Amino acid sequence: MAITLQFLYPFGAGDRFDYDYYLGEHLKTLKDCVGSEISAMYVIKGVSGARDDPPYYAITTMEFASKQNLDNAVEHLGPVLENTWKFTNVKTQTLIGETVG
Image 1 (spheres, rainbow, N blue to C red):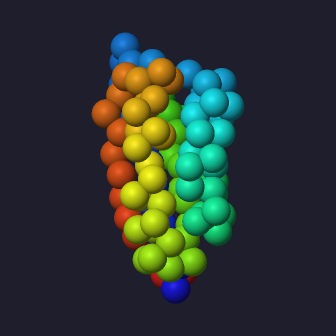
Image 2 (cartoon, rainbow, N blue to C red):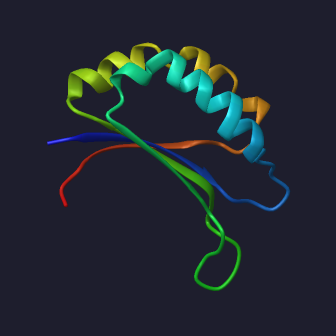
Image 3 (cartoon, one colour):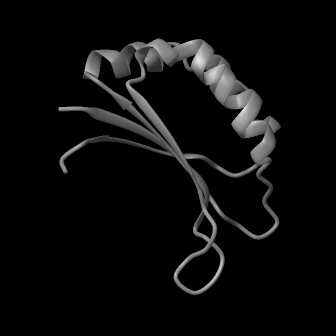
C-alpha cells in the first residue's frame, strides 16, 4: 500500500504564493533532493472554494512505494524546506497518509 506526504499551503488574505518560483525552482530542488524516492507527484493549484476564494493556494502530494522510501526522503528534505520563504509566507501544513482508495 502506498504512503503519501502532502504539503498544503492555506490561502489567506495578505499572504503571498509565487507559483512560478514554486513550480520551477522549488520543485526542481525537491526532485534533486528526493526525486528518486518518489513514485508519483501531483501539484494541485487552488482556483476556487465552494463559494469564494480557494482554501489552499496549492496542495502537493508525493506518493512513495513504502514507508522506507518516505523516511529516506524526509531525511533529505532540508534544502527544500529551507527555501520555502522564497515563494510563500504562509505556514505550510503537512499530512502523511496511506492510499486507501
